[in-house]
Length: 418
Image (cartoon, rainbow, N blue to C red; front, side, top):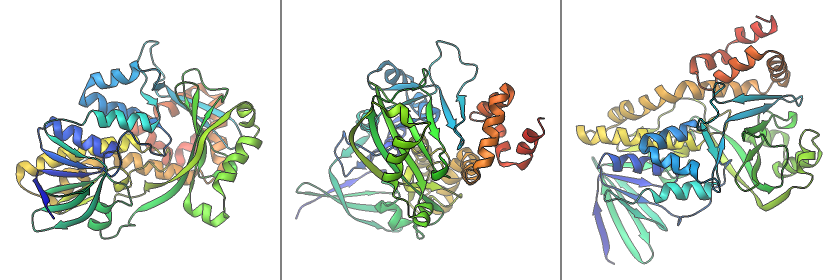
């Protein structure tokens, strides 16, 4: 059997947002790399379909014209200006991403089906620096002292690609994480999400705020409604796996029950129609700053368990980690150093410096959601106090302010009306 042999600088397993982010920034640095993807694009990915300001930042930094392209395609992308938190008692708190937004200012984030967005990113990857193999199956990964060799099959052809570095962008159950990270379950917490597409849902915010409904029976998870283009909505639920096991929850039944029976929701679905089937997926969430690299490898996106424990955001963190992985690869290649200590300093330390506090705060907020009385209390107070409402809005862009959410003194001040 003939084996096609390739030498390159980096190998990326997976071409979703994490792999695409890595590839885009490797191309900008002029670094040759190979992308191995098991599917063929366009392909769907079960997800909430919400892209935050972090997603916009990575795209804008790569090429400002790309972000403008997205906002110009109203048939494919819906700009979103904020988020609505609905407390367990049914009271809603509207949080604009930018309370001081001007009428013509571009939205900080957007929503779009992953089928559309992932394919958009994929179409940006071809270049003289990126060699892409779709519909390819990894057969083996072997590491020597200073190289990684991946053997994969595409159709009837077998390939052997060798590089000093490999990037796992193939999910938390992907082959790179399994092979290179000794404790594969280290520092992961799981939630299970269900996603459905509905048309005809009413009562959506005029500025396309995404909605998180913290229903009592789902805490510390939530029910969501995200507006999409063409009158569609992404509707779903996400609940911690241990709670599902503990309470023996049938997630599909609970989601449909909320749509049918919850008085804050059901009237909005009176004439709504389910489009396609309800689908589920696992959410590997970041609960501590565990290793996401080692000798000759880096993990990105879901492979690094970077889903936000509170908001469930994964796309922005995947793209952001891909960008930082590319920067780390560039430094590693320049120095000729591919060992655990060097890559940790160039990648793990940088990523956690920029995202670590945000993820820790989100983990705390997730735990606070176990106490519905506290959630109700804060939302009730914020609805009566414009200054408190604005403070909470600013917390979503100012990490120093957001840190206050972790402190008992913040809630004590609310209680005392200070």
